[in-house]
Amino acid sequence: MAYDFLVPVADKVLAHCELLPEQSIGKNINAHTAKNGLPVLANASMAIVGVRESRNAFEKKTEKLDTTAIRIQFYKLLMGNWNSTLVDMGDIEEGESVEDTYFVVKEIVAGLLEEKVIPIIVGATQDITYPAYRAFDGIRSMINLVSIDSRFDFGIDDELISSHSYMSKIITDKPNNLFNFSNLAYQSYFNAQEEMDLMERLFFDSCRLGELTSDMSLAEPILRDANMVSLDTRAIRAAEMGMSDNFSPNGLTGREVCTLARYAGISERVDAFGVYEMDNNMQSSQLVAQIIWYFIEGYNFRVQESPYLNKEDFTKYNVPTETEHLVYYKSNLTERWWVELPSIYASHTKANMMSLLPCTEKDYLDACDQNIPERWFKAYKKGYN
Image (cartoon, rainbow, N blue to C red; front, side, top):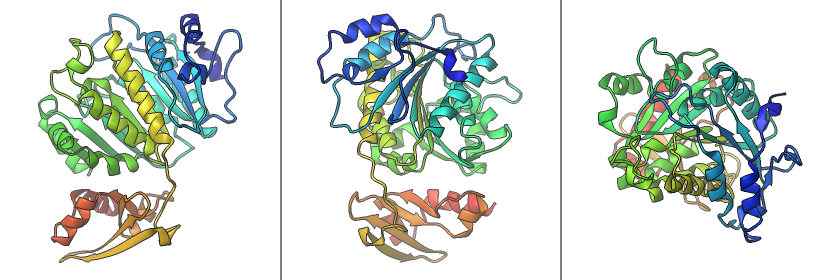
């Protein structure tokens, strides 16, 4: 069984927990230890899994990811007002080959998904997103993937899979379960024009760093529609990550990336969350720990709601335009917005997906001004192509 390949949490982390207050995460998490074995998943909500594989890094790693340092920083954080149960499954070490590691990641993530446990993957390189995506095979027919990254990571034609080209593998590999891909915080000078053109041709969504940081709420509907979120910490600016050579002076701040993590946690559709490409220094470990904390915090504020299930909790707005008749819904509880898509959208995807697209109030106001939102148009085209 794939769980047999998991390495227990280091004794150094467990010893550190002895000094922590009762309200700390370290005192309230069920961890995989050499003495007690794997934690029980029966009542678990989320599971942390470290992946130390780095052989497919685009820029070769000089040292292994220090998951122990990240855990020490995470365990010392204090619990929020949470009603979820956390487990720590330990680490996946490098297999005999990279493909062996991918297989183990896929099997472990699939096992957690089948148990209705959300995996929180802490990985050395972002190509681990690929086996995590493949774990949905047979569990969910179509996947919406959101990447928080300064690059689209399509790579070069015929390039072997790496942390800069894993998306090409996801798009082309069979079975093709990817319905939509969205990128948040890309930086134009890191992406070839051909990659930007490909995003447009495939009707994928993207939000440039400057656009996003001017209004972080733009990310909320995109993350609300995601099944899986992959965060490349190289989207965070160097000053926030310990001034490493692997990071750019421009990027998200610590506060902004934690906001995105919280949005991802709040989304009732997100079933897997991954953080990748961090460096081994104290500041990086602290920020990664806080990113995970905010994802868990968001999870504990999840609200299951749908205009089609509880109509009395929503206000419906009809917006006729010159070319389309748009129908918007606003939740009276959370004040979140959705817009209807043509019914053919749901049937075309061959998945039991609701014909509703998460959106913002600005999208509604733009429609009132006869401007059809770009995300609606892309989803519409995707549904008919």
